[in-house]
Length: 150
Image (cartoon, helix red, strand yellow):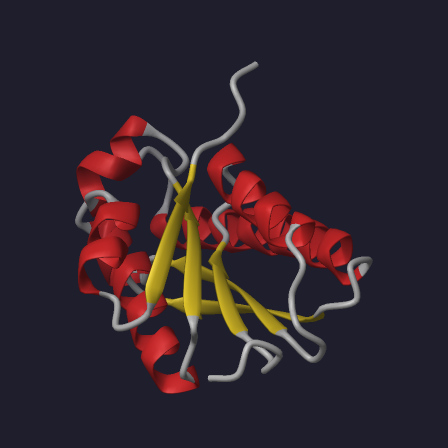
């Protein structure tokens, strides 16, 4: 690929500070003209959600989780648009690891950016380390971004 060729970048977005840091890193770097950024979020399917311990009805949890992810992705999309990059956001249903890997392959992504840690320890317990899975199984380059210490 020529040095000035547009790049296809996926950023995993889950509402965490790690995801925000990944978007910030992408926004701060110089990219060739016409570079495309896909902010990709995954909401676990209702069937996956029912396998974990739920304190609220699954349908209510699913609606709230989707709304939370949509809000986070929308905010980050708006911020990234100010850089001149071609940006779009997409929310899919499924396991975040599989969604990121599948979409990267389908779209022909050149690089995936993910936060070092997601939303919570319980998420990591239930879902496994998304960043580790993506880094070891992706066909393209992967950058795992740590959030800034407070």
